[in-house]
Length: 336
Image (cartoon, helix red, strand yellow):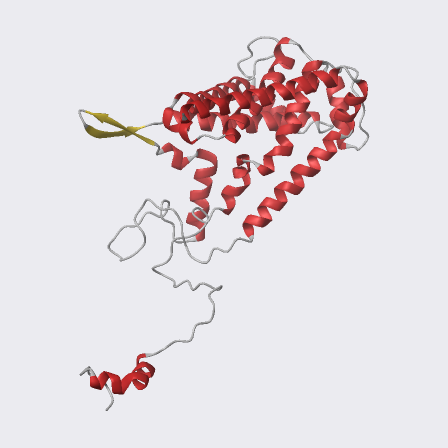
């Protein structure tokens, strides 16, 4: 029964993407809708993204974290002759920064991913690096693609965008040049989606938002790849449209085909939905108390500042209050 429910969720995710595609097709047939999509919606979407992102960050930042609760997998600093692990169990700010950097840029915790199999009735543990590899491939490629798109929003084009484009296409395969990040991005998305569908344990805990996020990212990437390699778009018209957004003088592109509107619709949907989805881990990781705290509980006493004041009842006060009862019960007392 639960398996059927999971497959229904996957089907609903595909139907949601299909609905967005149909809306893009409808916009293609209406010039008025095209004007709204290219001249009004970008500002609404950016406002929703910015306000939603800031709201989630502020909301998380206000959550009380009175105790040190870092996730550790190394020896804590204790006695002088016991060697501690300053990366896995940092006690100072620099150690925390190093661990956070390794987590953000190298997915260090995911690199230690393991698998368990029953062989001969006994559990056997082994390394599982595929998720780390394709996860890192996807995230790095997505970052490169986003930075490459800066050439559409800057005039003159910033060196970062031109340099990345040259480095990304250094293999010089095909015309237009095939970008390595495009292939890696699509491969990473394919692996992550198939993993959620094929692996029973992962499928069991997957929700609609998990499938929809991956399919939406795939739709954005697919329409972009189609416009670059198979149905080339007029880059001059695209640059005019995007620079119009930046300079607050939006203009309707002369080339208003289905692929362009589909790409924009998918991208706008992703951008507006991102602050309210699991994709907000891109900002939330910096506020995770299991990562951004030093584990110095043995060095420094941390008192919860939100504790309500409690009247301390000392032993002397206790004895003064119950001395006669203690004597009756033949309990020793310090004062007669």
